[in-house]
Image (cartoon, rainbow, N blue to C red; front, side, top):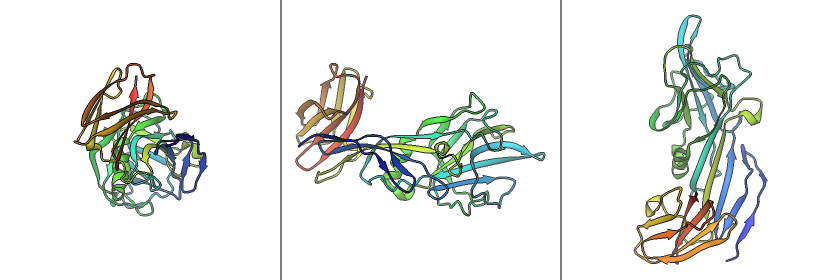
Length: 300
């Protein structure tokens, strides 16, 4: 089948933009998209312990703190939900990174104190038009992402790894209730602040970059993770492949230019000498007459 390299620059609606190359290699598409919600697309919420029944729709901070207000100590938490319905249901997510940018214009305290936070997975529905302290949704510590203490008062937090969380959302779309920003040290004068979806400067709003592989033109879609194990990742000299299949499979490794650098057949497990490969990202494909299983690995 003919290999081709297609660069798609797409301007799309609903807060989506794809600004990276989309690579199609022998029926496998490698694509990255940016999801950057605004005041209309996606959910954004803030809840305040002092005003427990107040809804703060339109709030320009994505913030969490323990601070004092008129001599009263109070906590603040923020929520965000990304609309990722454009990601194909059978996509294999191999990278998801969230970038948060400091808000330089709001009157709230910025990065201050022992301000390490957690990005917690939200586990129940909520709506930015009605969320309050008293009605905030439930969350879980399972899969929570740690944001370390800031080193400067106006620090951005780019490229936060959230691959496992986003993979869960894609595999089970009804579980996507978003994320909560929660300060860990609940004592006075700790704060972490970023721009929210409502911030007027688009480039400063929270940005989620999702990269995925997608099989096309194959009778069955990409198989689930438990069917194959590739190690180590990154790999240096030897790549080990372990599968659950007892039938013969064709193995092909291609680079991101679409060039095949290795072809062979295996029955179940195999070791491949990749010491001569150039450093970089590769796609490995295991296929039978009906199925295609795709993984990405890094050679260093």
